[in-house]
Length: 227
Image (tube, rainbow, N blue to C red; front, side, top):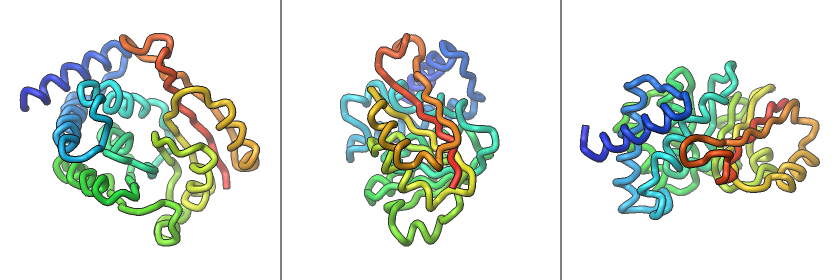
């Protein structure tokens, strides 16, 4: 293990311990390795904000792994819309090897990097797709496939609904990381897609020690959908 990987691992373990979240040691090591790979690749291309490099564990790796505790039990196959540098799709794949995943992004360079990460981390339960999820080709390939759709992109909920409906099974979940006030965004989505929403929950993503009482305004939207 490299020095930087070891530093990332210690930082990750601190966040996990503070929040009573205990990944298996090999999974925590893989997450730290992933953080190192992203930080290295970020010097060549913009996968995450340059100012986030020093806080990659908190802002990207830990939080993406932490949300796996909210994944519904019956989930088997997930789609990560707008995966960017592999968030949250790769940490989910590491934490939940029982799930199969498709990580989609329309930017070829980003998906090239994600494929490289998948190969170096030896992840056999995910594939990377350089595609727009709303394209006819993607919809034809993955129609009625997923029982879980995840995203932490800035795409509005109403658009995520439109993208997700052709791709999900009869019953599925939408798990979306968001920030700020979601009142208007949620209301617009609910007005248009009310018939498809069976249940909705918005969790405050507070965590110790740097986001007590959720002062950073991080939220996790979990929607139970039906076609």
